[in-house]
Image 1 (cartoon, helix red, strand yellow):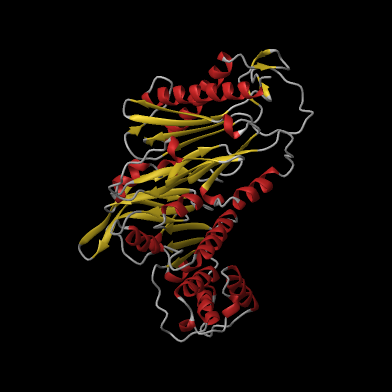
Image 2: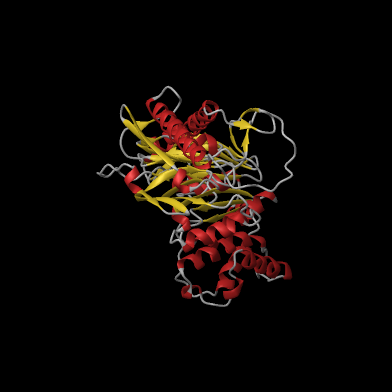
Length: 487
């Protein structure tokens, strides 16, 4: 649809864009990224024909752009610039109607039923129909932005050029606008858009062009562009990449400058003991990876609760019931990891291990109910789920990579299985050594302060500390449970 070859140009005698080449296919949403001054808007003005090329070629539908008359080009291409004047005294509908100019012919322009239909459709699509007869000057910046998008859509273009289309729009209208553009590209519209928001561009664009100092730095799919090294090189700022929670598109988080922080360590002094639960309340939020009933997955949490429930606890609506319970006890669900176990709280055990430059504090409640050997085939469950028997908390006083979090879970699971083996805990159905219970829960929480820990495998300092702390706390809790139940 558009082919740009070795484009160079700018304003006056100065070159702003230097040797930029790319192509955009029909029905593609193509994003242009780069910091201020990188040449994004200049490039867009060259593509739209507003700035003459110093050198290079632009083909629109296989035809050189200079071979189009202004009216011919307007039938193919519509432009929504970054800043549009809004001082003239037109109504919203009149402003949008100007987009039909390219489709009118003759000295005396006549307004047709088709023109009316297209304008009303553009107003509807952009959410501006409700104030169609208001003066443009009475609208907010975000509303005017949507009006000028409606004007561009009223041209019925095959190609739409947008310079920061979400500028001035609130969150819901940003989403609505980009959802609309994505739908229109699926119907054949080609969109080239400048973005400042890297994450929006990643979510919606089929491909991205990343510019630096007027040239192409990188071009490709979002996964190719949204790499920490690329963003740091172009924007000269620290970011961290993570996946979007619902779609396979990378997202970037800004990393603020490191501040001077006091070290903190989670210890046994922070445990609060109650007859029906134990808890730890951290003075800072900890980065957590958890399988708790409340607060599962990744998050930042400051409260950790392990609750005792009867072994005949009804699991039918456990999430709702557990949420009510923790809230009644004064815990904010957004800040809390909550677990449940049939083990008595008096049987909980803890262990602190220091290994080289990192310390680990583990807390465990462990019993032998529901013990299973995960390697053995089992009959289909005839009973309802039962509350977890082994719950493990691992608090690492250091700065962990995400790799270390996941490896830490593996190391903790290995240590738990070893503790059960050494204690001779059996899977009663298979008659073999148990590896855990049917509904165990675990969490790894880190202060994210102190020495950096990239790995937590079994031979690393962090892994050794996790392994020993989990093994010893699970072993002690199992022994406490055994002694209490002994006749």
